[in-house]
Length: 167
Image (cartoon, rainbow, N blue to C red; front, side, top):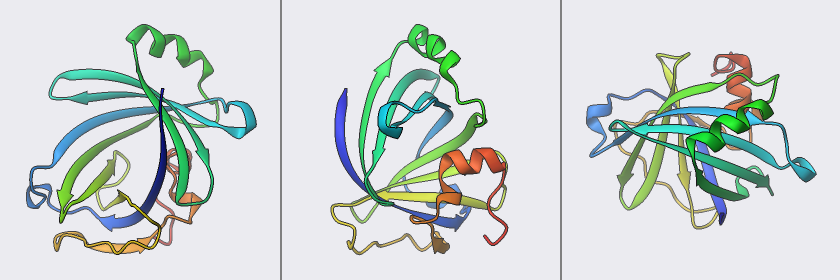
């Protein structure tokens, strides 16, 4: 399993016109949280469709701070994916979202558009250090940073079925 130390910041944004995002790669993602692993390890499986190609992934995350984590991810077979479904967290609905990956000024952005909102999305960026200066494309209207707000985690958004009221 690939092990990565990640520094990632997350922002609440207004959904932009995707045509303004240069060469955005579109992924249809179905994400399912599994029962926590040892020591509270967050576990999930994903089904990702890109241009009629479907792949499956298993991920484990160990959160160090709100913006730093150790993430282990590996591609799995459809059979493994299906067998892991019995470990689904009962209190966490399936997440369906469209992710747009794009590069702006040598920064790799991931914009997630959820099926429950036509107005808001989240934008994530992996950084080299937590204080790194971020340059956003002009078409992106950042409403606020939500890296430290657990209400904007994928699991919390799935449970709520919407963005928090003060978005």
